[in-house]
Image (cartoon, rainbow, N blue to C red; front, top):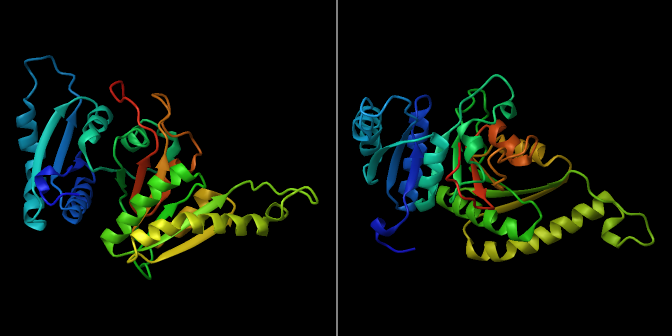
Length: 298
């Protein structure tokens, strides 16, 4: 990465109403850590007839100026720009992610189960952005103080997918001065009967040991590239979402991967990323594992 901040991809924050302060501060901290600029983006889905709408500049002046002032006051080294764009929030933000280092949006707390709200902005974006997506949660007042700063990352077991997710998690841990907890869980391990089964497939314990060896070998090059990041591995045979959420109880951040799945459902109900995205007590970064054309995003 070059030393000229102007040549670096910016951090983009989707700013809209409730929770905007959390989103702006989280994005500004990321921009400061990366040495990048910050773009505050407000999407307006106008239904008024042409000629009666306020200009994007006028909307940006009203909605975004207070947040620009906040960044300049609390994060004086961060270059900040404000933009208002006409269009649906998901479509506008997905398009903005094409030239971004990170996209940051907010998550609204809801009483009903989150998976019943597939139309939310985080659900619409997860797995379909062109850069990692950070979803900032409101935070829980009764959450215990973490014994140590830590980033939690999900290792799926698929080498090509894990590499991208793990690389981002290592970088986040280094940026935060945090340890990295790597969690791998298998819901339905395939235990085979001897004598035909390989040694490592004859028991749940053997499967767990084999997964730990494979994961340890996969982490080797990343440990060498990030020698200042302490790493702890956790391999479980059970629900991946449950294992991640348990680890996230004391974490600063959770990192997961997600696939794009078309306009009708980017994250399938019940998927690990979906559960973690909505139930984690801390911010969640979703690393896209497949990129799609977002022009038709709703």
